[in-house]
Image (cartoon, rainbow, N blue to C red; front, top):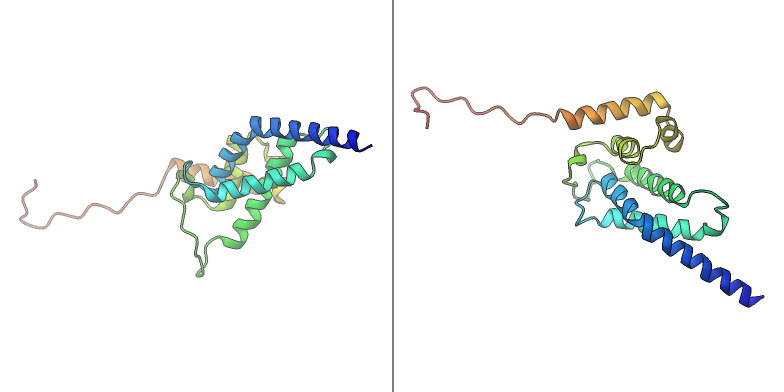
Length: 167
């Protein structure tokens, strides 16, 4: 009996390692996009990934045909969404603001955009995952896309003073 359990544990560990080797990089990239951190400096993304992989490993024997990548991604996304809700903005904000291109977006806009464009998740699935209506997901995706495609302009150049000679 113990020998059979030990061989099952070894098989599970091998399967999980193979899963992480194949999907870990993509999941880390997804987490990095969600947190809007730089790819080479992404501690929040790494924590999200570690938590999602630990949860997936804990559920590994109960997957029964479910896609482990989908399970890990769902957990990663829900953890990010929950954390973003508690830590986004506000007067007591202690976390430095990320500097990536996606940092201009609100966390929910980032979620919807990353799930749709990077992960290829349909609006209906995204809506179900986040507890939103498909229309709300569509609005968030359009707003996020518009923000990225048409960033706010910087301040206007200073007007020359009277009598000044241009350089």
